[in-house]
Length: 116
Image (cartoon, rainbow, N blue to C red):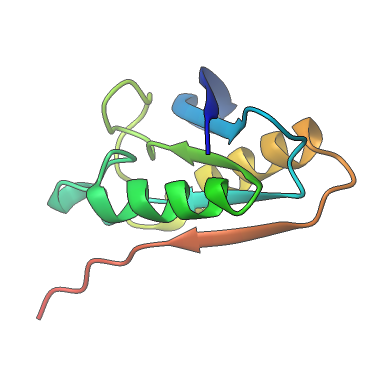
């Protein structure tokens, strides 16, 4: 499915959050999804291959998909906050997505990197 992609710097609690919004090009989205990346201190970014493939699958299913980098990753401002600030980042990204696609159902997805 062809896609429309936009880059954004969203307002986050610790500064700007680097983000990519993808949507189906030929149709209006039927829902919206926020996809979060793995742990930032272990190399997680919105460009992680699992995150990318989840976003692609959702977009191919008709979703508008927002991926973003948590604070301190790539162009996102701030620094890692032991999960507390990262939850705030996700809330800010979700609020932005829900405002952009008001009235559409939404979902959250993510990829957790568990270390033994």
